[in-house]
Image 1 (cartoon, helix red, strand yellow):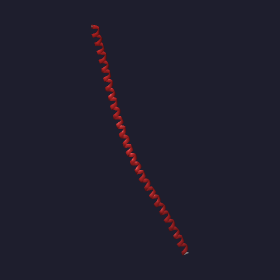
Image 2 (image 1 turned 180 degrees about the vertical axis):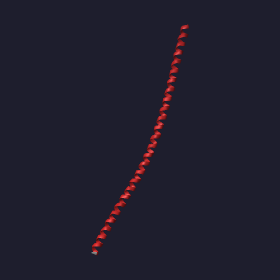
Image 3 (image 1 turned 90 degrees about the vertical axis):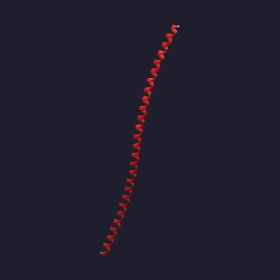
Image 4 (image 1 turned 60 degrees about the horizontal axis):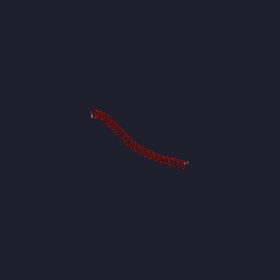
Length: 97
């Protein structure tokens, strides 16, 4: 009877040890997964920040471009008027001669 109890006890101890080892491995795997997720989250955060910065920069550049286009159109219109006035003035002067 004692040997049976002893064998049962040893078997239980062996099973317990196996379960403890499995749990240790699972815990280690979970900790590694958690570290990996933290690295990914950090990378994602940096990428999101960079994307946000680039969006703002693109908006700024677009606004500058629109302002330059508006200024150039205004300059073109002014120069066209000036050419028309000078052409008219030239015509008047040639007609007088």
